Every structure is written in structure tokens, then in C-alpha cells.
Length: 399
Image (cartoon, rainbow, N blue to C red; front, side, top):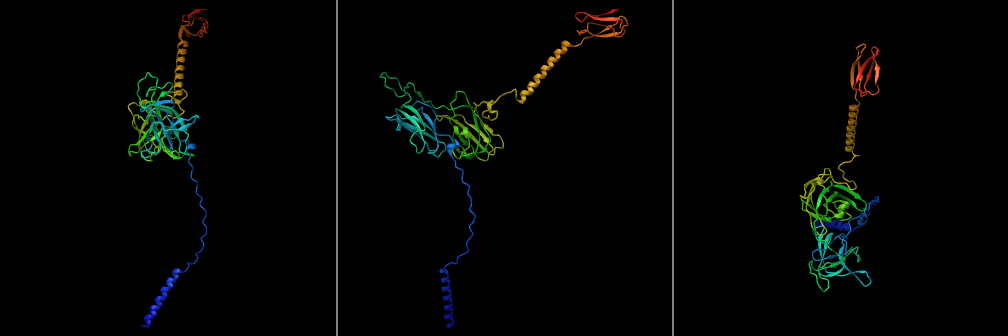
């Protein structure tokens, strides 16, 4: 019994010591030497303005008359909006709810508040201004004077009052939606580019030949044939940066680093779309872009040529080129040959043998040589040789 009690006492003492150890303060550890400070490179600051990104703008100059079918179009970037304005008593522009209808085509499907191509038509009669306003601003950056007509038709009236749809003197009518027509379209192989304030982006340069009299191209509807991803790209962005997406602009089509088949459709200001062009690139820029399909209206001779370089006119032939120098050399050689032939033809020798009357030796005489008209026989020296006036009569006279 005593041993049992002693064992219980020992177990209780051990448990108490363990519990006491749990609440004892932890001895301080050795101080850790401070590590060297790490330097983090500041991220490049992207600036759309300094980068030169495409700005929001109206795609027509005014004043114009718009109705429910023919309106004005605008490209909106970076959260810009289209708003109506009128002049107040002091002549300043102030926001006003004009009877306008906005038809918005987002650049990226699923982003209704992002970049978009907007068509503005009239929902009623009125007059004022249509302006493009940037975020956190109230004054328009681009403005257009418009006259609004509820309908596109209208008959003249004898009362002198304006009729909806009737033309306004000195004011042009808004053009209807007409699809642009291209004679040729080129894409360069993908390339990686970098610019201060723009960041790094992968793009492919784009060039086009617009058919004479065609509507201008204001956008390209680009679609990845394999994945179905599609986007509307501002034509000004394509002209400045190529087709690829630029980080500072948050605009452009995302190009793949693997082979990609792209369908490009030119889009006019009114939203009308032209015929599609289908091209394929390898994703690395190692080989030329392959044409998969071109419209029937394309110029076969133009698309057979390489991508045109801005500032360098394409010449079918140049006299200062290598081919031109070879051609000049051939022409010069031919000219020299003709001159030599003529010189030989009219200045050739005509040798005739004449027998000396004294020694009967054969004397060769050039009857076409005008410098010699007579001489003595070189064999015997006792007979003279002379030529006629025409150089064809030769005779020998004994001295």
C-alpha cells in the first residue's frame, strides 16, 4: 500500500512539473542577424496618352442631319460616353437630353461598358450638339452640330414650317451605312515590340488597299477561327500598333504564340461589314503569313505582292536598280554592236589584184581607200598604178 501511495505521489509530481513547464516563459532565442534589404524594380508606368493610344472621337464632321436610319458614329475608349448638348444664353455648351438613340457595339463581347463603336440616330425632332465626353469630365472633347429628324422620309409643305426628314439648307445629311470594299489586305508575321509608356506587346502589322470610291474602314472585326474568340478593333489602333493588344491601351486582339487562323472583316462607320479575309500565321514569326481565303473582289495582282512598306512606293521597274543596270548594259552593248556593224559595212576594205604591165606581178589594191590614188609597182618600179574617181576603176600604165 505504501508503495502504491508513493507511486501515485511521484506521478502527481511529474504531472505538476509538466503543467508548470507549459506556463513557464520560453527562454529567449539568439537574435537573428538582419538580412540584406531586397531591391524591387518599380513596374513600368503605362500612360495611354504618351503611348499614343487611339482616342475617343466622332467619325464624321458636321453639321449634319440625322434621322432614325442614318446617323453619326463614334469610337469610345477608356470609359468615354456620347452625350447631347445645347447652347445656353451665354453661348456655352451644357448637357441636354436630346432625343437620341444609341446603338452600341462592344469591342469585346461581354463587356458592355468597355470600348465600343457607337451609332447615334434620332428618336425625335430637335437640334443641338452631339459630343464625346471622357470619364470624370463634363465638357466634350469632340463635338458635332446636328439637326434631328424623327423619320427619314417627309413631303414638302406650303406653310414654310420645317418638315421632319426634309433637307436643311447648308447642312449635310448623315451618310447611310455602307460596307467598305478592299482590293487587298496584308498581314506581317507576328513580332514582339516594346515602347516606353506602352509596355511590351505582340502584334502583326496590317496593310490594306481601299477600292476607289469605297467607304473608309473604321474598324476590323477579328475572329479566331479555331477558338471562336472575336473582337472589334479600332482601325486607328491597327494603323499605329498593328493588330495585337497593347497593355497601355487595353485594346487590340490577343495573338497566340501558336499557329492561329484569323478572319478579318472591314467595318465602316455605320457598322456595315465587308467581305471576310482569312489568313494564318505560325505564332512565332518564322514564316510568312499564309492566305487561307480572299474575297472574290480582291485584286489578284496586288495580293500576290509582299506587304507594302510605308514611305516606299512599289515600282514595277527602276533604271537605278540591279535589273535596270543590266538592262542598260544590254542596250548599250546592242547599240555598240549596231554602230560597229555600220562602221564595218561602210568602211570595209575592197581588195582587188592588178597585174603589173611590166613584170606581170599581182599587186593587191584597196579600191575603197580614198587616201591612195596611185603608186608605182612595188615589184619592178617601172609601171604606175592608178584608181578611177569612184575608186572602182583600176589600171596599170607602163612608164
